[in-house]
Image 1 (cartoon, rainbow, N blue to C red):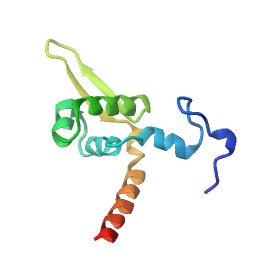
Image 2: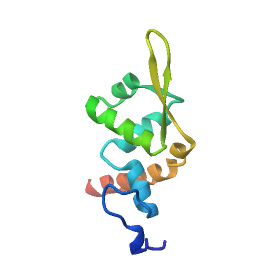
Image 3: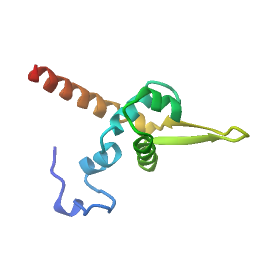
Image 4: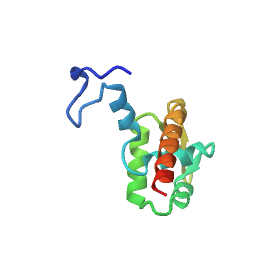
Length: 117
């Protein structure tokens, strides 16, 4: 794997150009991969379904992570109009393409958990 050229590394707040940095921007932050995992388990999910699946996650963090994933193009937010408008979230093709990355994270983490006893 080639290193990122120094010119690809950018200060925080700027758009990342290094491939690893781009991936981390899409998955960065505690809980982000788990929110994505929950979306992978179903075709679409309402906010309440995600909140129930991740009960230790506060509403603020869940909202922040969904906004982050939406901005990264990993998740789409769909709003059904009407008196009781409903919102659900769906993984994009870009979000589904992260499956091998998240799986590799799981394998690595499982091996560390086993090594610790």
